[in-house]
Image (cartoon, rainbow, N blue to C red; front, side, top):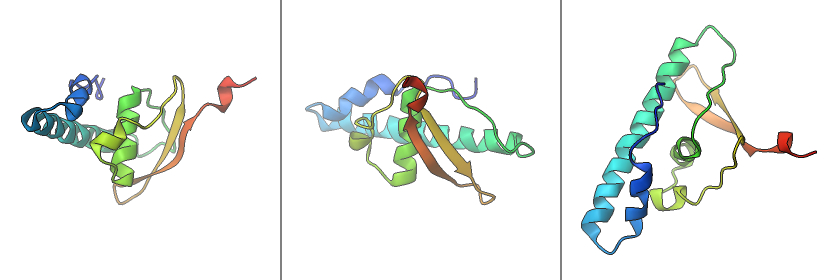
Length: 112
């Protein structure tokens, strides 16, 4: 429940509007939401330090936000990142409080 659906996802369409004011507002909400996602991920990692692994099931836009953060991708490019239903993205969390993405949108389990 820590990473509840974030309000900004529908507002990303405003990145492509004609008014700069709407675009800037959407960017501000996006940046705040991305900081929230990263902060909550860090909180979860601290809570589960004693385990080697844990699973987090989340919305594709949360995954996009994490990928964008890790790779310094702009919001305009972030919404183009493809994610599939049940795609597996794997993160390695370091002792320094950062993470690296080791697997992205893996859907091998869907192929027969």
